[in-house]
Structures are given as C-alpha cells and as structure tokens.
Length: 119
Image 1 (spheres, rainbow, N blue to C red):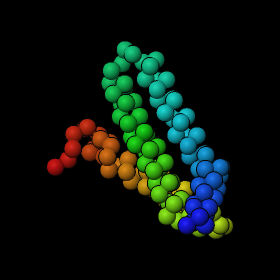
Image 2: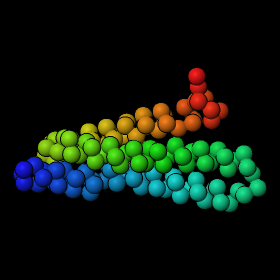
Image 3: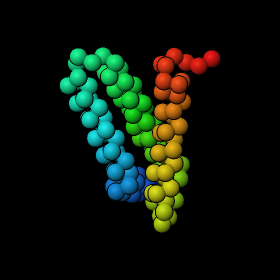
C-alpha cells in the first residue's frame, strides 16, 4: 500500500512540475484574465459582455475538467505517468481531450450559439 502511494506521489509530482501541464494551466489563466479584463473595460456593450461571459464559462469548465482529469489520470495510470518516457505527455493529452469534451458537452456554445439547449 505504501508503495502504491509512493508511486502516485511521484506521478503527481512528475505531472504538475512538467512544462507541458504548466503551459496548459498558464494559457488557461492568461485567457481567463484577458476575458475578465475585456469584460470589465466594456461596460457599455452588453452584447459583447454576454459573449465574453459565455467564453469565460466554457473556459472555466475546461479548466476545472482539465484539473480533475489530470488527477484521475495521474492516480489511475500512476506507473505510466511516473516512469514511462512519454507518460506525462499522454496524461496531459488525455486531460486536454477530457476538458474539451466536458466543455463542449456542458457549455451553451455547443447548442449552436443560442444559449438554449437543443431538443
């Protein structure tokens, strides 16, 4: 049991200090910051603000789905992530795909841009 926890700890460490996963997080945070700045500075344009909020909503769904999928992949595939040559790359790819899929399913952008669910 202690060996498994050690492997999971190494996988989490290898994943969260890798430049690839940190790059995805940095791009997300920078994009969220940019959307918030444009939202705050355009108080007189409600149509733009709604579009910005929709993008911010989709991006925040992606961000949290990426973080959650990262933890799930690191724990479930701990040996691969910790020790395989491309383990972190595969885990980041899987987390990005999972985040995009969750964002596409949950976000109102997936309903044709109308903000209402398709029937």
